[in-house]
Amino acid sequence: MIDHFSFLAPYYDSLIAPPDTTRLKQILDIKPDNWVLDVGGGTGRVSSRLDDDSRGVILVDISRPMLKQSQGKNGVIPVHSSVNRLPFADGSVDRIIVVDALHHFNKPEHAVREMIRILKPGGRLVIEEFDVNIFVVKLIALVERLFLMKSRFFTPEEIVNLVESPEASTRIVRNGRISFWAVIEKDAQASDGSSH
Image 1 (tube, rainbow, N blue to C red):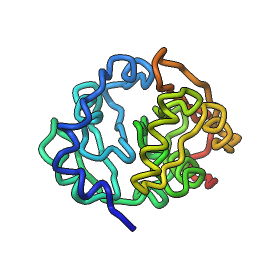
Image 2 (cartoon, helix red, strand yellow):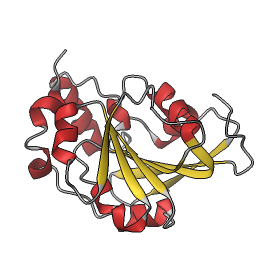
Image 3 (cartoon, rainbow, N blue to C red):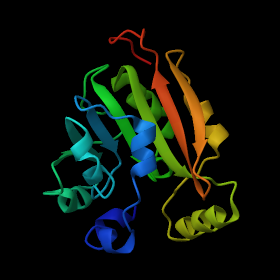
């Protein structure tokens, strides 16, 4: 299997411009005592812009070369891990982001369940993805397939369907461009020790 991200790691930040995180910060509603977890965050191009608003930012990625590029970026704490088995206790994380990464996860349904597991009651998970209903995103998906990336892009409705937890509610926020945010909130009354 081709490891595209090991190859791209040294060039990634030059190729992919960091996004404007103003709207993402509003949607996340980060409090000063919150821990933020960036899942599949690669080089930290997004999470390095969230450190000033929170208690701390932890970046989780499966690619060691991508994590190496994140070191020293604005207080980001890199952790090597698969999204399918996150090394955090049930109900331990205040805010979780997944930016332009869900379509790369090999088991997205399991990944979403795992993120909801570690989310604190009253916590928030925000997934930013390209909307495959839009023509240019279909082209991006085709290019990634041609490069054998095995990406699976989702419609907003499909992401809502991935959240099968009775302890969480999901809403879609559109950004007016080619992406959208799936905002998943864990019920404040949810028990910390439940597994999904």
